[in-house]
Image (cartoon, rainbow, N blue to C red):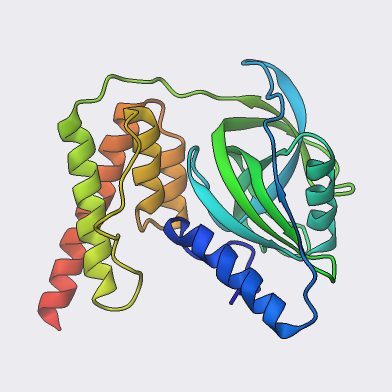
Length: 253
């Protein structure tokens, strides 16, 4: 069942959660749904500064990663309606201080432009969304939160490096080991053995990052890395350090 948090579950199970969530609402008898599959809308040109609706979250969303969102706050319902009526894109940034609900939060300047790939409208005005990260953005100026957070943003592409398969393998294996150790205490689930990543190393690097059990500030550091290699090296350093800490904790009982 869908929780009342904005970000729901882990990216590896978003489609299953969407299906089970909708089925649960249908069984309840009060749910009426209209499911929309979004078509491609025209993105901004590289270097262009544009006004963009923003969705601050207590989570980091990476390019090429999927997340499910439960939209219940009125201002973000309005953002969802506007996205579905026009360009399906909006920005996601991490909340540095403050809460998701009610405003007054402090927000990071680097985030991700995302696109709604699926949307289900609930009968009481809430939305269940599947959102796909597209690319990094940098906020140049925050505008008034009217009717929802708005900002002037520009694309901030990373330097795409030629990455050896061994670096990608090391990053993936470190994430798998760390998730496996955390699963022993029930903190998170192990990464499914059948989970595969894109054949494009750049896309795969972001997908591997999205599976890493990082705290939000470390996840933001990974998002802000200037190149593919820097991103993967930082991910490896963070997850291998976590792995060592977990081994010590498990050994001490």
